[in-house]
Length: 291
Ligand SMILES: Nc1ncnc2c1ncn2[C@@H]1O[C@H](COP(=O)(O)OP(=O)(O)O)[C@@H](O)[C@H]1O
Ligand SMILES: [Mg+2]
Image (cartoon, rainbow, N blue to C red; front, side):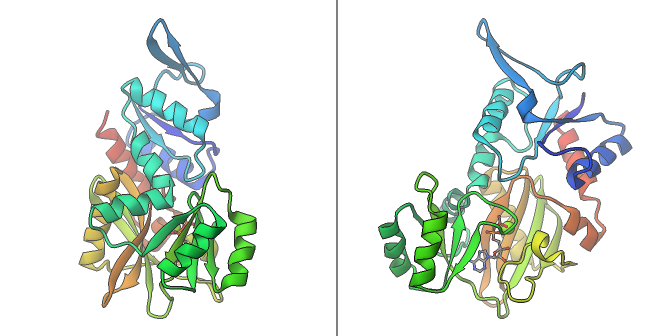
């Protein structure tokens, strides 16, 4: 088998279906591998793993479980990595990208512009951070989340208390972030593959919401990507060590763009729809360069 896609979803899930089509079109074999159904072993000091029935081991792996990737799947990824199988992306970059605050740390350390952010894991720490960030409104995010589901606007103290009661799991912590108001703000998703922009789109928040996620609005538009935004997205992917990245930028031409996250296994239904670009083919081409 040439390419293995590590996914807990089935063959009809958009990225899985498109990746399979793209692989077949290029004469490559691709199998979906459920990370819960493989068994990493260490026998007499040698690392091994049985994958499926008789598919054999893939020569390159695309880990595509998204932000919800579990501890147990990380173990599987590390095992494959230790076995010397190329992973696009690799476990270290996935660990960093799945956590929004770790992402802010890495990007800021590389000189990339991110919104002022704080990591909190107690009620007292939360209110301390509100002061440090200059007061409400603020955005509060679960450090691990996707599709806008763990992202909340906090307008004041009462709402903050309510939010903490519901969302603060102290072992995970929360991220507080300066709110970049929607007026004049643009939300850009830049898909970076192998250090190049593969495609970009603009996403719009639905009426009454500040979150511009394609999965919420279903609305995406092709965008003439400002050069600075393209450069920032590429630099972000590089800083994170991501071969494939869906970089989210918010901002405007005047004040510049802030990076808010870098997804390690971004979906591309909205991007293909908005741009007509065959993103699946580009991912497969990149994976094939490791064969
Ligand atoms: N600091 C912020 N200020 C204003 N809007 C934000 C901010 N952070 C996120 N958002 C909005 O919320 C959406 C979801 O946030 P994001 O960090 O990308 O999480 P997710 O992984 O759920 O997509 C973004 O696309 C953006 O529209
Ligand atoms: Mg996002």
